[in-house]
Length: 485
Image 1 (cartoon, helix red, strand yellow):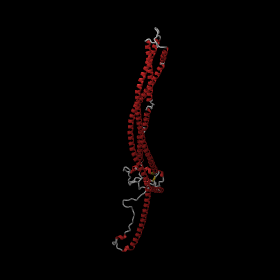
Image 2 (cartoon, rainbow, N blue to C red):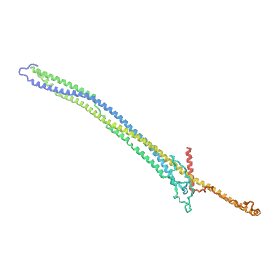
Image 3 (cartoon, rainbow, N blue to C red):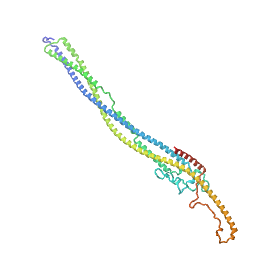
Image 4 (cartoon, rainbow, N blue to C red):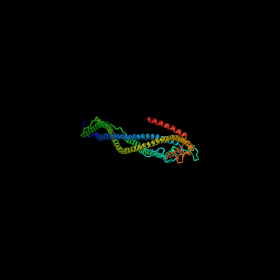
């Protein structure tokens, strides 16, 4: 480089242009680097916020899922308790069906069991079954129609008013006619009413498990999907590498500007540059656009990385806000579950109380069944007893008739003997001696004891008596077998 001749300083305008370009590039580069540095610092703080928010979101998510598991267990518990109640109710229904069917069967059997007309006349004497007692200590005959109770009557109504044998059995009453159907209906109606109440109570919590499951599913579905969070370390490392590249570029721009500024000062001092120096300056200045392009690209890269972190932070904040609403929903669900558990417990207590009462009512139905079986069995025994008494009466009457005939014959024989004696000897004996000698023999008559009446028994047809004996044998055999077991 040499001093130019006077009047030759043509490179001056060119150098000024190069310096201005270099300065402009340096200023732009400084702006880019300053912005990139600010973004890098903001990214560092943002990354801390993202990590903190993500940790909080994960912690709350895990807590929510645990609460949902507990809620699901509560739903299963309620469902299990309902299943247990259903099982008890179904078992009771099976027993009820069996016992009511048995009651219906014995009632149907009573409905075809004929009662001879002579058995259902009102009598002031004892009832057919005497004094029976029910479970509650009251008279067990409450289930028998007192107005038509068959009794041990002494009247024989097996003949009609014309004195003819009553053979039309279609008009005969049956054992069921003497059963108080309304009392039985009251028992069965009460049983059905309580069973309906049981269904109503159980229905009040029927949808609890399904409602809880639906609420749990709704809350679970409302949870934010687990988005893949960008790697904070990779983003920060990439920013760091880009920042170093930009720093090197900025350093190059600074050096270039300083060189060009020095060259301008030298040129203003009168020094001249050779053609080769000027070409180098031009070449370096021409490289400025590519350097600036790289700086802008690197600044955009840092900005993109920062935007990723900002987006991640925004997403975490949104998830946190969603979790806040979910927690409110959980609190509400907790209150609902507490109320459900309380009501379910009340339902269980109410159902158990009703079931206990229903069990007692089934005992009444079972007692009715046994009572009517005994009723039928006792009536069969009654027919047999009437037959036995008829045989006894007939035997006693034969004895009485025999005695009457024998006494009559003895009396007649005695009268003849006395008449013969008096005829032969009476005329030779003074009249004032043994006045009783002329008395006839005492005539005897066998009659019932004073206060008693002759026994009258109702008529029992032979086929009915045979059926009663056959059924009684079967019942006795069954009873004996049951007692041996």
